Image 1 (tube, rainbow, N blue to C red):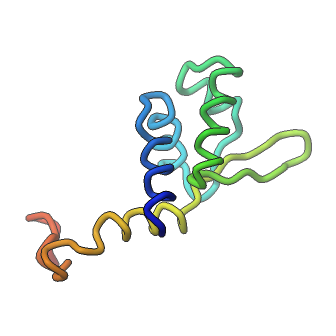
Image 2: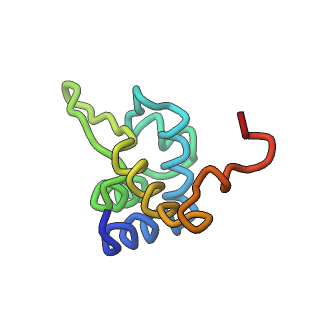
Length: 106
């Protein structure tokens, strides 16, 4: 991932409603959700939700699939994994095994 792509992704997530939408989609991966369900669960009006989904899609964090007359939004796991890798590639001086939080080590 390039730095500009990482900045775009992080900027898209740096807003409370978009972060809530993203986290809801992560919880419902890989199936995803329709905008109606997202709006209902988060209490967001359709125009506001549409704006936030468009921003997340432009950042490459979500994808859409047409299902009849509905759209289904899903998290773009490849993009998310690339962002996480970008953020942690130099973790612990090149020794990422040292960066595992306590209690998560196997």
